Amino acid sequence: MRTDSEPIALRAFWSMHVEAVNWSGVGHAEYAAALGLSPHALRIWRDRLEDSADENFEGRHKQPSAL
Image (cartoon, rainbow, N blue to C red; front, top):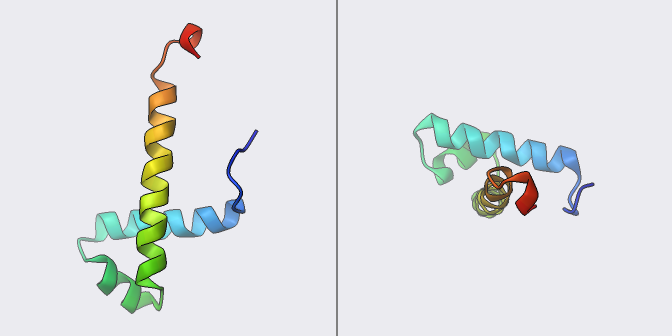
């Protein structure tokens, strides 16, 4: 069951762009300007996705009996 409140498509959209920035070698502001995205929103989603990845990473590496 999902515990987050945003729609899956919205999360996928920003996940794709955050990942593209990470691999592109350009800064967030440059990437956002090139695609007409909000650099502020891009940074917010980067932080949000990193936080959720940390939570998911922690849970995946626990022993099943510890969950």
